[in-house]
Amino acid sequence: MKLGIHAGPQDLSMAELKRLWKTGDENGFHWVSVWDHFYANPLQDRRNPCYEGIAAMSGLATYTQNVRVGCLVFCALFRNPGVLAKAGVTIDHLSDGRADMGIGAGWFEEEFRDFGYGFPSLGKRFDQLEEALEIVTTLWRGDEVNFKGRYYDMRGAVCAPRPLGLRLWIGGRGKKRTVDLAAKYADGFNMPYVSPALAADRLERLRKACDAHGTDFDRLDTSVNLGFYMNSDRKPDIPGEGSLTGSAQEAIDTIGQFKDIGIQGINIAFRPPVDWDNLQLYIEEVMPAFA
Image 1 (spheres, rainbow, N blue to C red):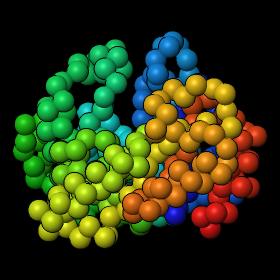
Image 2: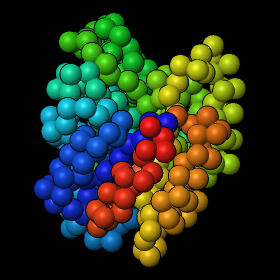
Image 3: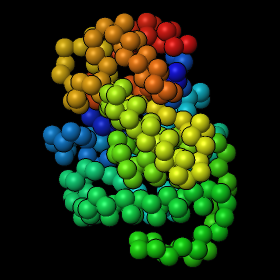
């Protein structure tokens, strides 16, 4: 089981964020990721600090030496796919080949509207995401892109240099287009804040989608994000079934349930304030159970 940290760059200082990155890098975690939002969520005050995703992931890449560095997930609608492709390759080289880039359709209506993107229907957002994925993956292969779709028109675009170890992730809980796009384009599939039962259902749907696309299911990495509330009296910001709550042993048992259904990675997700004492307890008592 690959254990990671998912650290949204929101509601905390850059010094605290770097402390969390360093903790992940120096204590045997496999993965540290950020997310891509213009506002902290859940939204309470638009003036709460929230750092931009590409810049934050670039900082993560240069501040760490050991972990895979990722973003779960960049919103495809916020940037031209050529920009996303170039940013991913640049971060991959900054990290010496440790980069993982998740791309999704977005969901946070307030930030869409406030920053001038409107808020297209879910179907249209997924249509635009699929065009972006086609362009990004073609650019990463080193091929020239000549593409004319509904949302993008690219003529002779080339992405150089080539990636070193860059991998593409699709993240989400959807049971139709999300798993279909993961099977068609991705190297990894991440599910945020789900129960073992829901994760098992999505894995089975992913397997069927892989069969339909002729994709080797076994080559895909899979992971789940769980809110981190171990030993905490704090009410989770997300449904309890998508969180680690209770004792260290209960956390071990929960992670074990995901392992038993075939999930390969668990990322503990933080919404500040960071519970540093229980993070240390997780490192000392939970992680050795999956070494």
